[in-house]
Image (cartoon, rainbow, N blue to C red; front, top):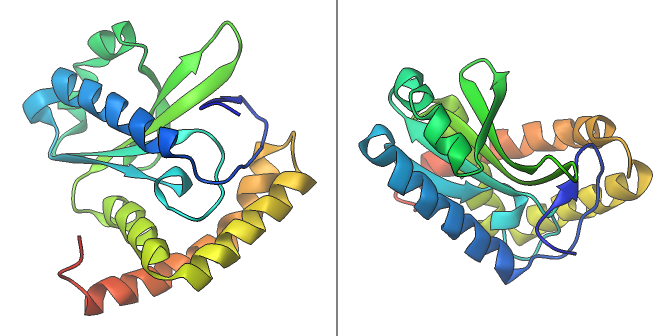
Length: 183
């Protein structure tokens, strides 16, 4: 399977080095376009965590001080095939790398305020699962089961992960608080 997934569907596969390469390519493009309007950006989500399965869609988080400054780049981003989708959650805007002709998504770019809860949650979860192989395996196993149960229902797949994610985020925050020098 390549780096892409038809919108609304679910499939997971073991980690691939290509995901890290694809993330870096888009992060370089974002740095070139957004320049000083970003504080930091990171490859996040399951494709950034070794030894677990993931949907072959790359997640990147972009930390900013101001959403307005990023929104001013929307046309330039669109010209580089990075399309603004919507305010995904309060305090988070979503951009997508998307093949509209084939209804295929390759990257989700989450723009959040740097240093606030959503930024920290993304990094904490990634780093915690990298450091805790047992929890990473539990999460990966759940993702595989849910993908088999809901191959055509992304919302049901996402809902099925929510309780475990909530628990992981709580553990990850406690872990980060005692390991504040990590990453």
